[in-house]
Length: 136
Length: 116
Image (cartoon, rainbow over all chains, first blue to last red):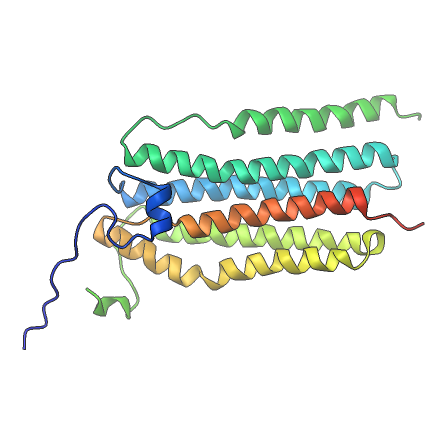
């Protein structure tokens, strides 16, 4: 009794869920190494977002002796908002890179990179001003 | 081809892509556990709602850790077959987890009163 399995349909959407096929339409599957590299880059952004989240939690938890409630809540919320923006942006960055690779198009620039730079600098500046103005 | 799925999967990628990707997911769950640990410090200030935040953070880490094996096997077979389907569900889940945790954190800081 022959047991050979007929080769599966090599169409672009074979084996992909409808959801995946809808989000990543058209094009051809990129080199699997590039897909995995994109996934790792996404995870690096997510860990950045988690570090901002941890920073926001820490500012709220540890600085009550040092900072007044206003500046404490402002910086904590700023860090948490930044964590949300980077976390959500990481998904769209991943999606856009995956789409570009499917179309063999140039990779898009990371919009979340300047957001992280400006946000991080802003939080840093707030603390620098606080340290300078703090009564000794 | 299907029979090899049951064995320990092998690949011929000297770049060790499946292993590095698996470790990247592992580091991400560790970062979640660290965030959950720092959330513990909110307990005295923000009360029991902090427990919900900690439980959700650890749950996200557990879900990722529990699916590590599946992802590693998919990656190895993807390298071996020279094609892999992008893991939209895992990426979307992780991104949404961080966004929800951030939103609940902001809610806590803004609306839950600090006693004393």
